[in-house]
Image 1 (cartoon, rainbow over the protein chains, first blue to last red):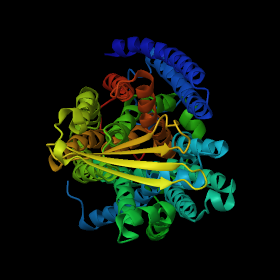
Image 2: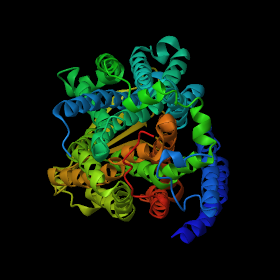
Image 3: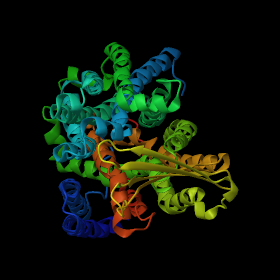
Image 4: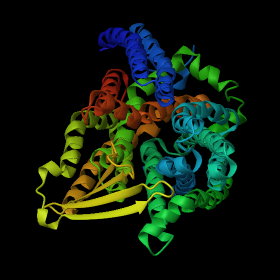
Length: 81
Length: 512
């Protein structure tokens, strides 16, 4: 199971940039198609809020590959750096 | 394990005091959304582009961007000064903002100040909501015995849905109580009566603040404070320490992200789909949701309680899986129940009424044609067409304004209630156990901050954007059901991550 968790980490790392690419591409296409203020605001909001989330999933994948989720903490004492 | 009677009574008081306040916050937050059209006409006239811009900002910013910020601001405060005072503060901010929206004069009276004030108040509402939930869930969980944590926190989980129920109910009641004549009553509601649901909020908030003031600080937090072990910088500890950040990310991608889309698809998108895509009458589309909520709400407690016995993970993931598999057929069935192509029209009962009203100083007239189509299953389709008859010979309206509204028969109406009930049942599965799940994931000293952020990104951003993204996808690709792919993909990704990485363990000791 731990091997699977680590391998899946690669998928999450790839999912981040793919998501950003698809989001920005769709935003540009839609704004070009209908360049009114409502469209611009909507897509700007989507891009601004989803890019940090996409970065989050890349970090999540990175942690998964490094085996951070092999053993989850069982008490707060385990949550220390 | 039986609890002493006074302990049971004490936890009941704690749950009631926390839940009532949280329910009022949800009510306050939802009345703005439920009255968006009326508010837009009062404060954000479409004829003025800047006001329209503010309207879009009010809808987007408050609901989606500000909630996670509220989670950070009040989460930090809750870990620094305590749960009790923080969620008391969020309640006061939310209540005052709501009451103030009810008092703001319209655009016609004070011009641009009106939309700007409303936007600021809406932002405050979003901030307060971002801080409330984490506080209430943490507070109740930190009072609960380990084997009943899911059950006790599930009462907090009912509040979001009940807040929506209350807002829809009060709006419908007010809409019909302002005049004996139904049409006049609705006109009065759109003119000034919409303020009543906002103003009513202040009484609810006063009662709730009084109740919350009498509450004591969470025993776990109080103990940490006495021992001097509270966090000095909860934000830093929550999001820059790798060992805690990885749990925040896991909570978001393995639980709250999927839970958020299931919540908003089952309640908001379903209602919007019934009204705008199926073209069901304004009131029927809301009462369908009201009945479904009423029947499904007890299941939050059922699944919360069950999660104390079998663990939180699989109940939440089963809810997501069922949603992923059945959303398309369920929404397809909703559409077909209202689709006139599946019905036979009783042509001899068809009614057409035309009214012509002259437009002052133009010589033109406005023609309103109402056509009622009756179908063999009892459905009535009302088509209202408005066009202009020009004085100038040969000139006609290029695109008349056509509105369609369907009144469903008893059988189809209750079928829709049953379908929405099933979707809300999924909501109860993913949402009922999640407070206990989040509380158990983080240590007491940074719990408020750590659990609030993934919760509000999952619900505010992934969930809150569901109706908009679904509508956008429908506009881009044309298919009426294509919007569901957003929810299906997000819930699917969350399901996979949850299956792989989450543990089903119930944490016996959350005091550390």
